[in-house]
Length: 236
Ligand code: ADE
Image (cartoon, rainbow, N blue to C red; front, side):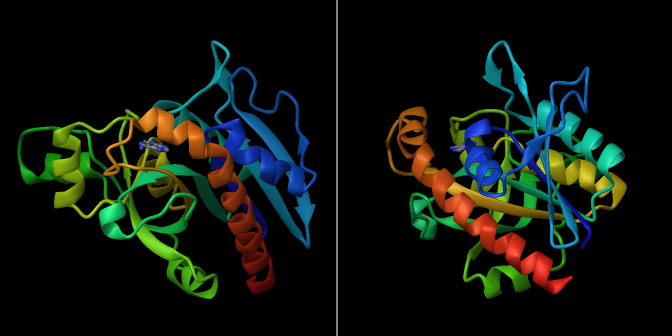
């Protein structure tokens, strides 16, 4: 695997990782888009980290910014593998813990309510495939797997929960399926590495729980990503 491209929404999620590899910013690479590129060379492999960038002084979250970043990254960098790494909500009832790192085994949308025939329903749900090596990697690194479920909000409405439960969603985020969608168009494989900041069934206020655990979750995410990179560079 010669070119790996991480796509990350929040600077806080990527910073420990960028510092660990001494990655350099490639200034204005995506100009006029807000996306930012950091690069390092590692054992014959180019490691890229693409951040969604900022608007109005805060990191761009969500499907629109993630799609722009994924599309631009794939067209400009031609990665062999896209890795969407970041934080997520998860479910205590499914055995999740704060700062636990998961590998995704699929990606769906949970807040697209489109009536109509099965074709519309199927398209709305997404259900994008992951990189075929995801399971072997999860086993080698002793990480649990779960289905990424993506929506445009940090909170969870009852209709979101109903959809998540009906389709086996486990790792609630705001970008994963959008990146899966773009990767599916280009037939570029995607690997999900997600660390839990909040438990959607804890009863706590989500933003407060997310903020309290962000630093810890980003540290475990960095440790996991170091192992992911080690695994990928030793295998290919
Ligand atoms: N990112 C971290 N926690 C999240 C949650 N509960 N929902 C969506 N995205 C998240």
